[in-house]
Length: 262
Image 1 (cartoon, rainbow, N blue to C red):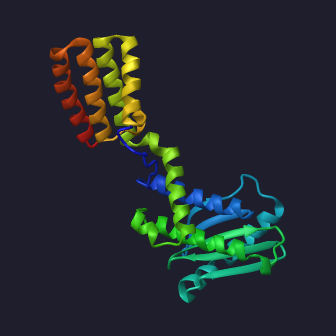
Image 2 (image 1 turned 90 degrees about the vertical axis):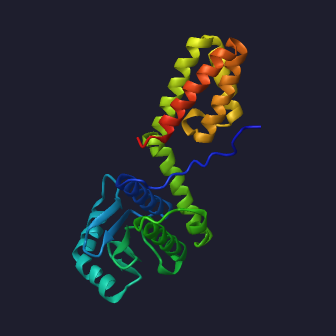
Image 3 (image 1 turned 30 degrees about the horizontal axis):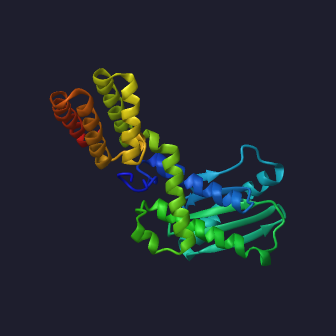
């Protein structure tokens, strides 16, 4: 059996850039899934924190966006002074949906498509869900099992999905990924000089299969197990003296790399 179980390939926002990506991803998902044209996350002071806007806007979308800009001061006043939670306003150019995100921010969705208020329940429910998700992200709260359990299933599922999307897009930039690439290269270089290229590939393949994950996602426990496996193979091929020396050197190397802050 593999040494480790399923690797949790999720990732929370660790930088401002990660946070902005998560916010923009959530806005884009909500806009596209509900057939809306424009989505923005703003502060009550008018600052735009994140947005999802098509590269090209048609005249009706421009008109609706300008209408929003003209009423922005009034909207911000309603949100900050009157604690407005949600608003749906219809104009000739289209519909504007506003949802509060805490006390100091809000979501805005614009659509120029014909909308019947009586048939908007599904869209409005999704907007409320997006507002809860965006507030969680904006407040930089952790996404742990205990925290997820405090939300309803739809919100918890969306937060978990975002951590997976961030992992896919940004894991290659993390220090864990860079350390693992360095360690993988180290073992390849050391092993090939001791056992040759043919046995090298066989040894590495068997070790990674036994550990149960690929080099990019290895943890300290994975690498410790990996070290024991490759030293065991080295002992079969080159004997105890070479294996014992390699084990000491490689163990010290692993400890140094995995304990470093960079």
